[in-house]
Image (cartoon, rainbow, N blue to C red; front, side, top):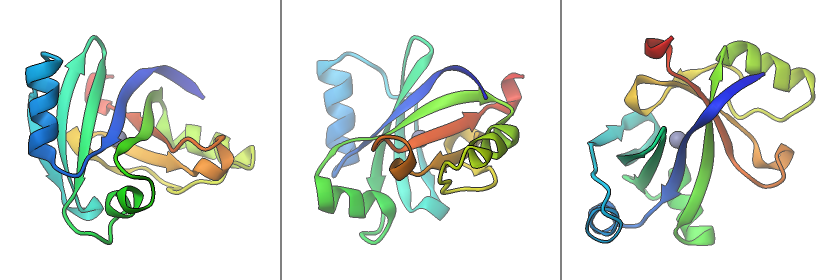
Length: 137
Ligand code: ZN
């Protein structure tokens, strides 16, 4: 597969508003977008630093993946997202190499990106998101 850069780092937070305040008031970044992704039951806030974004994730329902993650592990880094050219073929590639996929086909994520996750069981414990911004190609 052809990765181009780290697209974003996903961080699970309990309270989006107070986390945004930390990133703005302490770290001096500017939140440029807050978006609810209904099918993932999360609210997201985005910051940009260089080519990489920080994605803060707050669950909107306790039984969603972010809610469960925080219940088990507390707040913290949730996933690492790489931008890839050719998401579907990257997924096929990973599957051929017997990597466990959470998404066999791309789906829509925040910011209109096509996204898919690789299972942490196959990736040394890191939840890896592959994403492709077709608007930029
Ligand atoms: Zn993400």
